[in-house]
Image (cartoon, rainbow, N blue to C red; front, top):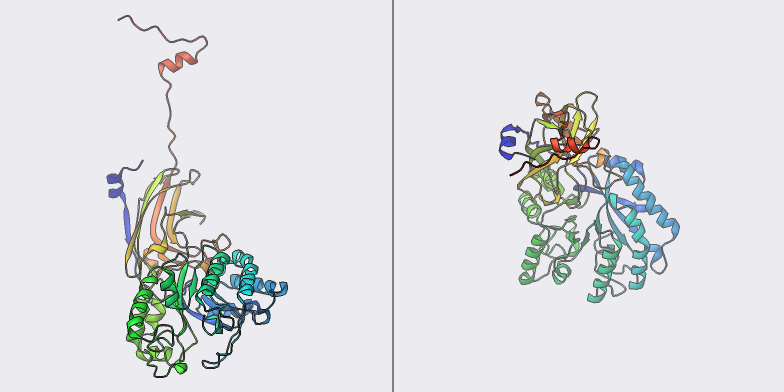
Length: 467
């Protein structure tokens, strides 16, 4: 039982220094677009992406050969190898299945997709693959329909209202419940209303007044659509790419630093293509001096503000802790993961990872400081002694939980003078506090006189005294 007032007086508190550095972290930031099918991705190329500071790769599932046929087993095996390569390299994937991939912004009108029955059959084939590899899927983009899988220019009437709903429902059934699906067009998302697991991707972000057809031509419709997407993306994932507005006559792209600062925050931008469309956008941000800020702000960015612990506790007892964390990014974290407090034994370095109550990092809002309080039950078998304290945000998937490449790094400075710093090999941040664990006290129960009498041979209780 914790005595709150006593524990409050006993707490030790430390403050931590935020960092201005760009910090590569999972499921956010600039992504690299693989020029090949997911089945052709290899670990060596993905390792180069990781070494370059990116943690996201766009990977298309190329179904060009299967517009009227089942996906062959060898292709499914190749896709599984692509997922395995991502896992080994430490990156996650933005996945989209397509039946075509035009090479220009104006030659897509004759692109071919597949009948609805084929789309459904393909999703049924992909369902086990998605389930087995959900750990390295960051986001699924809806795909399948029309040119580039962007839900326009369908050759099989897949853009009709009933067919859009049918493909949506097939996607929701095929993609694991712990992963979100991003759709291309605001009118669909508005018509469907808020739905769990459904987000937005914009592949012509800021490229024209309508984002090259993403939003409606008429301002009276466009303004409410934009407001609706700003509301949706406060909770659901948003990302995409800028584009060449060549297919939008009279386009006025919004290319400056003020625009990306405003719209990145407004739409809670989590990720952008690192390579496209650089000349009109990325190069302008570099020239305007805001590119480093954009790199920092994409997605979530968690900086430790302060931490407090009781400096002494018993093995098996409750241990009060408190952590304050600021989200300095534009968006929430999308996929679940635990907040851990890590006890590192001074004598030998053994680690014990403990979950901080029911803390959910997905609830840490952009621009806000969240305080997490937890009374943690220490393991009964925890050896007495001194333990350095660290914090960690490992991946939630069992296959990745112990892999530091998939851990979120806090946006804080290393301060060796305070015992604070990132330990890359373990994916944790030492906060400069120490816990002294004491041996669990054994409670000795002395038998009562009555119990002693009953336990003795032939024992009986003495008679009650007469009133």
